[in-house]
Length: 254
Image (cartoon, rainbow, N blue to C red):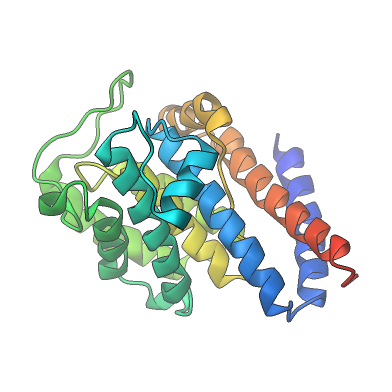
């Protein structure tokens, strides 16, 4: 598995260098790709958490503001808030990794939960939490503020490959589980914020891989074996790079 990780990193490095060689990309191409990926990412990230809007329905809600019959208000608001959160991380990504603060993570979470749970949006939990179907015991809520300080110290000091840092940041944040709700979406947004800082496109963990994704996190927690989790993130990054490079080829920039 270690060899597969290194092989994936090497392929990604080559594809990232190729993408960089085409920069700056035409604004119209960037806008088209970013809008497509924002909707796709919103659909998949929310679907992982149980939102039943389809990809096309998500696009209708966030692009046209049209309500979908038979879907809950919460599902509509989750889509709208997630799109706003993506716009927000693009702005925060202008910072360096060492400049990211706890408040930035709180702000991401606040946007994610803004319209569906205002009282808990952007606030560390004050209760214990459990995940249905999981045996994981999360830290006592009283420890969360200090654990977040430790997390930020790690984030500012680590010098791994950027994708490994982004993946570990996701894992560590979701393991602290600092919020009552929205931990997974916030962790994936933080992961993508860190990827955007390094010039990668948004990496989308597909809802079709939900079981594998959740199991990989559980495995990392219980065995300290991050291999499967790393590969899920690496595959998502590589797929996005492939799609960007294909779009460039189809636009005759290559």
